[in-house]
Length: 366
Image 1 (cartoon, rainbow, N blue to C red):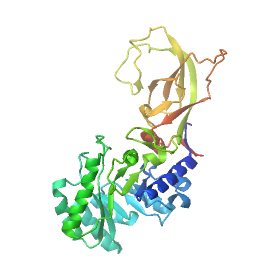
Image 2 (image 1 turned 60 degrees about the vertical axis):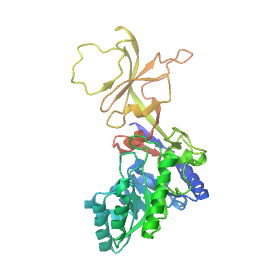
Image 3 (image 1 turned 135 degrees about the horizontal axis):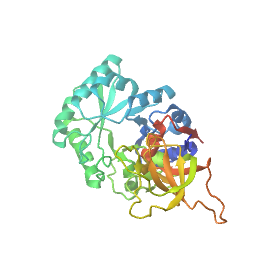
Image 4 (image 1 turned 90 degrees about the horizontal axis):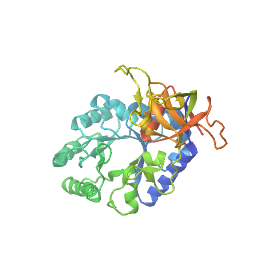
């Protein structure tokens, strides 16, 4: 069975490094674990006491994941990072200390659930700054806060924004400055301090170093940089973070010399994805083709990269992937790959997320 290798020590070192980094900048931060979909084995291996002691909150966008976080560590402070559905208000209050919100009707439901539970639920209200994902419209923000401030069991602790996730709108200095200005306007109008300005994510990390974010931005929601060592802004390593935190090993289950082009009438009944060689090779040309033990149900091949640059993708079906090994020879003319050998891939964020959700892939923590 194909295997996802998770280098837990390197991930833990990344998290500790970020904790110290944010502390030096007087920034609160939330570790966002949604890539792991609440996998309890991961949580137990990575979120040890020495790792989480400097993290302000641990967040996810799935209630089941937050439930698992609480089961692994009941004292862990948690944040729900997706505007919740009102119907799940009681569960949100139960499993999350804080939630990001954009709907007054939902916050009303959270208020009722918090009253029933005998607690106060913290909320950060998100404002739309151009990404066209979640966020209260800017022209409605003052009236929105006014209504929420009247709820007895809701503690409004901040204002936030989400940029770079859907359309890829960059979190510029001017856009993030708007958060600060809105906070000052709200504080002046309602005499209510909002301690958190939540505008930072992995994409904004390099901007800290270049002084391209307002100093008042003091809450970051970070997942990708912690687990992959990179910022999506430039897809480059950030500072000393580890980037070699995951790898994927697939087994060769067949290896034969076969034609480069299929033979016969091609119908519309195919379910696989293939590479088109029709314009570049002849019908009689052959190559060493290997079949690997994973497919589209496990991961999108566009999200993985083979470490051996001489290997190219031929096609993929639901449960098998075909690659071209070329001549498959060492310099001394001996065979390079054989049946039973493994081929290693590097992975992006979405690849890891899908592989962790696949019940057909082994997970190995090292």
